[in-house]
Length: 155
Image (cartoon, rainbow, N blue to C red; front, side, top):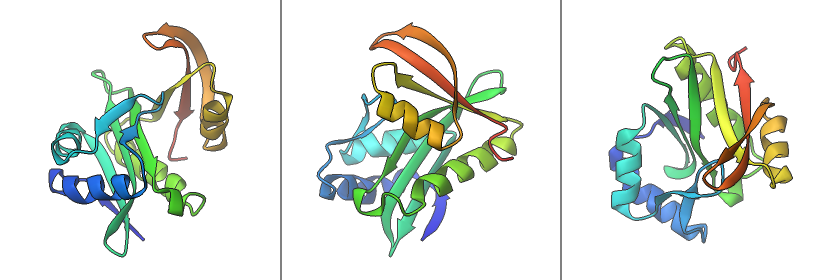
């Protein structure tokens, strides 16, 4: 498997991979659709992300991670993380998160943040298992949220 920066031209192959996995969209970290699987939706997301990586196996997408640094450059929000169900548990998540963290660290960003629903303990456990710690709770548009951060993510 290899990881490379995602490009707008990946739209159709990513759309097909998500669709074949019987998923309708790539979800953000609070389980809201981040981008639809139309070629235009994927192309738009890949073009607008400052930090996005695609993981491939046999030239087919098996994972995607998208993050965007805050305006002040001190932190970045993990906007999307998708792993093909057939590759779950094979290190794809860890590899993508490490690549995101390394790329952001090169820009001076040392903290990656994810926002998860307060009423979804399995999602909080997932992020905790990948080095994220609960920072605080807040009221968001989708209800109560927990903001988790992975400090010095490359270390």
